[in-house]
Image 1: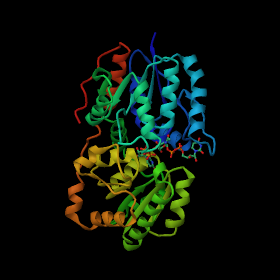
Image 2: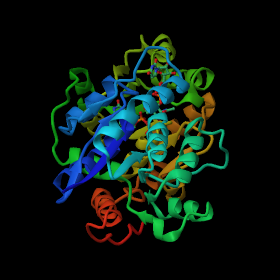
Image 3: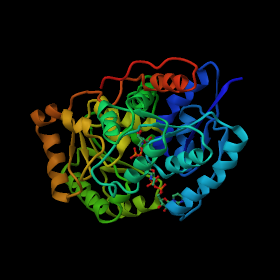
Image 4: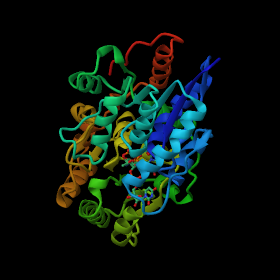
Length: 381
Ligand code: UD1
Ligand code: UDP
């Protein structure tokens, strides 16, 4: 009788980071993998599952226009519970710090099903920032049986929180597995307008912003900084793939929509986004996943936040916290585009977040939890 492992996820970054794990579990002997999606995101989630050829067994389909965190949480709990009763998973696997992850972990906890937390142990100094993610991941730590820390830094955070050493495995981040997978299979862009990024002599700056703490004025300041940079530098193409949240579009389109060397697109497929990151000279982002991917492609990252739960690249010198001060963004991007030495200092390809074997370590750790095998040695960072 195979053991049932149920990964549950709901947003774009969870889908990307869970994909190599789902593939690994599917290939494992003695495991029946039952992927469940909450549908917290809709198009962006389906887009990622499509890229990796994953067809969820259950779709909780909780998305409804205008609903807030409470409704996303409540609907996930209500709709996941009967699925847990029907499939009786031996473990539930959740990833990261989203509302889907916390609600799915809680549903499993209430059914006394062990929770495996992927990307465990990221921390900032304040539970209020990022909101609600920092709270979500701290709460998940309390109800998790097996903590899969991406790096030694996150392992140490868990140890400081009182988690037992034997309940932690350092795996590396599966986003690096996903990135290496798609970049090893180069493909022409799905979105034809991105061909502009490949014109000879074109310089490319990639910009993404979506986080709750960026909504409103911080995001508007980022938009204005990009507008100033674009007007000053007509040879450089500023590409902004816009998150599906309409608030993001409402801010960026009025400020940037009519500048010829700014390209605003819908959220891109993971393959297009990875290809674009590889073409870019500089990445400007408030995204967690993008902060992890860009260093492995040797791209300097300017982080549009006041703090980060991903200090590894900052410490290694390839990422810098710039916040959302308009003048500072203009100055820092200008420095990287104009000063070769400053650029070279930041443009080192490093992999503090993973080595492409995170999913293998994750699957082995789950097998060990289920009594089906042995753990692999930790990722050393
Ligand atoms: C979510 C995650 C965030 C992650 C991001 C990745 C949470 C709290 N946030 O942020 O950690 O970085 O995905 O892209 O899980 N909306 C609806 N109906 C819904 C869901 C969303 O109308 O069912 C609208 C609402 O206006 C909501 C907005 O979309 O305020 C944002 O969606 P939400 O999923 O809460 O947060 P994201 O910004 O996508
Ligand atoms: N990404 C993508 N298409 C885009 C923008 C981002 O596939 O248009 C990918 C990116 O490569 C990274 C992930 O989405 O792996 C990050 O997701 P997001 O920024 O939404 O969330 P976060 O990582 O901040 O939680």
